[in-house]
Amino acid sequence: MYDPSDSRWIKNCIQIMPVSKHVLLTFDDGPSRQLIPILNILKEKRVRAMFFWNTKLLYKERPWQRVIREGHIIATHCHSHKKLDNLTKEQQYKQIKTSITILEDITRIKVKYFRPPYGRFNEDTMVILRDLNVLPVMWDISSCDWINKEAPENIICNVISHISDGSIILLHELKQTVTILPRLIDEIRKQGFHFTLL
Image (cartoon, rainbow, N blue to C red; front, side, top):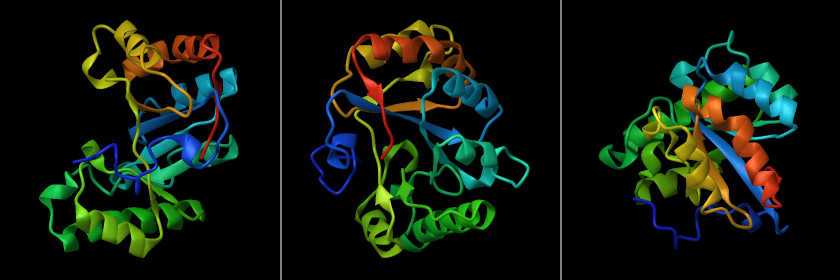
């Protein structure tokens, strides 16, 4: 499991961009049906974000061109959503390498970032990422959006109550996340924060 003290992980955007009052929005588990509504909100609010995708869900007809055109980053979240620490090193490598290959073949853009499903990994994962020259990215704020389908207001509270300089915020491509996303962005800005990318 992820240890917040492990310096090998990017867990705060200040590690790469040392500017105060900046935070990063990230969306896991896409591309999904909620991608277009999310992109519409981000465009309206003038926010760029990172999308960590499972490439099992990606095909050429998905609106990946728009994601790139509007200044967002697409990163890998493995090919399918498996707990890496339950896999052999060879199985992990196949999950990560397959995902990178599919992303790069479709988008023609080099994949630079990775996030493990469920935040779970082991030392084999770190060796593979180093060999593939991909930077691992975690988060320091979990919105818990996946467990707040019936109470989306809690998503905003979860984020705002923990936000700090350089926070990387974990969201998912879910309907309830779409519902609160405009207000979440507004509330983050009310706290004096700006949005950035790695």
